[in-house]
Length: 558
Image (cartoon, rainbow, N blue to C red; front, side, top):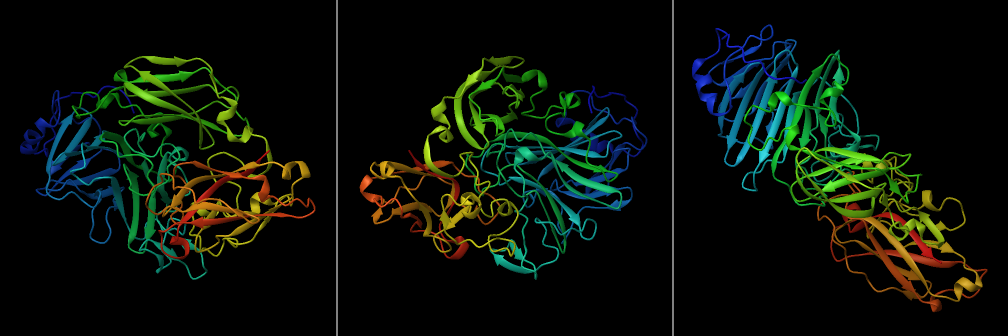
């Protein structure tokens, strides 16, 4: 996976000289056809560049569009369904496509307006390395989709709709006859949770190993579609920017490499993973925007104090140009984030998915920015506030609430979902598991929480807090406590697209605070006070697409 490319000048007989000349502008350094592995080389069939990796993989790239038009592994064609190729977005159309070979590397360059896209093959490897450079918004190119022929990797997973044709939302959420739901959106995992996606069957594994996502948007906890399987074939994705439930602006620049990898059925080699992949062989390829390891830096922290050790902590770096993240060690909070482009970043410490500390750090090429122990102020973690009662905990997710786990891979109408209605009694022992993770104006608005107060508690005003992780159509909670009703709060900034119905609760964490006067409480301590939570908004439609919100925690402060 590493080492400098060979520059042997042995020319294979079938290499088209005209193509080699055309590719000379795409590569810096010596150019020559090289027989560095049995069968390794390329040819021009008039329509496509045909690349043989010298292992078991032969692929074709259209000379006119830059589409991947063929993907043959061990003699079997895997590319294509519905007459469509594999490509950036839905295909670029007319493009300038060139090829050049430098020793053990073949690079195909695609230019379409301000967009540049690259395919690289290495001698003896069953992999294709891809880079995409979106310079601005003039070209729509936010994903690469690898289209795979039908019948090769049948599955019936949450992100499949092979076995169902009943559409229940938009044109991309489906219901099976047994009431289970399927959609390409239901990936289950966050970006931080996976290194690759794909399938394995019949002794063949086909995977896309994701890039480090330094030019993507949404941070470590973003969720997006990774793959799908339908009656006409399957799709594997590398999402560079997806305008659904996005919390950040789009970043521009060179993204990659991400890798199409074939195996003999097992997982792709860990050397391809975004945390371990090194590409010194690409340093001299002349790819605009490419920054080698020597041009990058590192941020390391000796520890994080003030953590709640019941939760994992993640450290993120972000600025308008790039994003990175890494785990904090559970024992002491030590962290190290490498491969960072030079610049100034906002460093954020997350408890679960809740930001509890931020600072600014600067990174220089070839340097390590070392931070002394970070101490999280007690007041930064809302869990440290003394509460009369609390439902859930403050970790930036709806984890533990009713239906929370299911909602990352199913539609709210799924037959496996417990009833979205039903009230909650403080002291029952099931407060969190009985409270629904999502509230909608048209589904379960008006849920009631019953609780008792002591005489001393009822004699004082208290603050009630409701934490949310995202909202759809400006849905936000208004509360009624017995006969007292709060003002309608202003909606916080949240993504404007679907979220709760496409497997994502990740938006902008926000805490609503309600100052409840002493006059609102019941003075009879034997009776239950009633907290009613309504979802208010003038937007949204009906049912699960009515205005809604996702719950992080609810508590009544002492």
